[in-house]
Image (cartoon, rainbow, N blue to C red):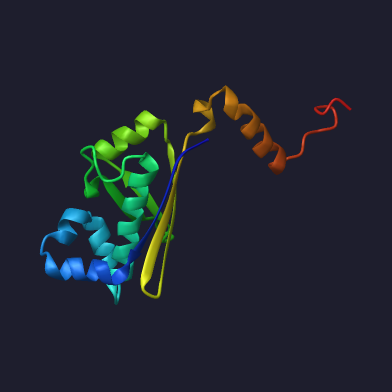
Length: 154
């Protein structure tokens, strides 16, 4: 069951300007692993902007926006060995996600031209599903594997 959705679009030049105008912007906003990944690129700003958009999208998916004691560094975008980005939560963001029952976070990042964007979906796993989620779970299972004739009462 989906417990939160967030999307954000960022102008890449905005992140470049913030980094140049404010000496501590990058260290206050991004974890060392994020900075290392992005600064290894020929142009780090599209990658930084996509990660910034991901953080904003997580805030939206949590239903708070940037408030209630959340820190930028409570949300980290890390890449696995294959390069796929994933969200890692800590601090207040992790506690809030746990309170919502979110156990899985889906992330999509993109950047092209002057923009970077991110979409985040917070999902509650079926084990935590409520009675009303049963039909959704059954429908998902049916799409993957049609029921036998006996299961349909035929």
